[in-house]
Image (cartoon, rainbow, N blue to C red; front, side):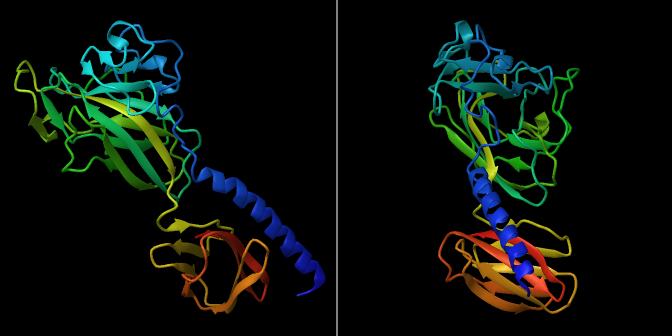
Length: 319
């Protein structure tokens, strides 16, 4: 390789390193704006005012609630119109019916993500939920639906016709005392910009457990929601930066292996550098290879794949 080629490759690596620094911040970034419901346009003067919580909306006619310590009447925290509960953190939370006294009634809250999801990237979601004191029943039927379009059907109060990609554990029935974590992983199709939370099951499929024998007027389950977050999942296998679709490079943290899938069988070479551009590994590749880097220390590395044409792919590995 001549001097000019080396300079060109060095420039690419430097630019990639700068990109890695910025991408590294994104791994811990919460893509849900105002996921803790602290920010507001106005303090709620009653319940049914989710529109006062910045960025959050209700996609149907369901009357979703916004509850804050600055609120008045039924919109105050910790004494709201359905019970007493301190926030999981901060000063506010949202509230929705997963099962109401009206047959088939559903309530949902929806938010636009701070950036669209990237195809092939795995994300980690979590939120905390708590059952209101005056609920007669609890249920495990709460889920999260990701969509590329804003859901808005203001003509219905019944369930939305979508299947959530993340659902609460079948064995998890939240109570009135503790905040319960609901979490899950989602591999994006690409372009998803909105997140919707609620019960996507009909009444017959909504599993209920009686928790308050003193309430007999309806089979109601009302939940508080707090600390909603979505971030890139850096724990499991992550698809790395792609320059050509004909070569896929993955890092599997469980196995400690870089997995390379190539559509062609041309002889090529894999080089892995540390951030000082020191070559740590130089290995010939076949069409599909699993490269063990379990001995590498935790950190960020740069990989480069070459063939007879020169450098055909550059990317990053986060271990």
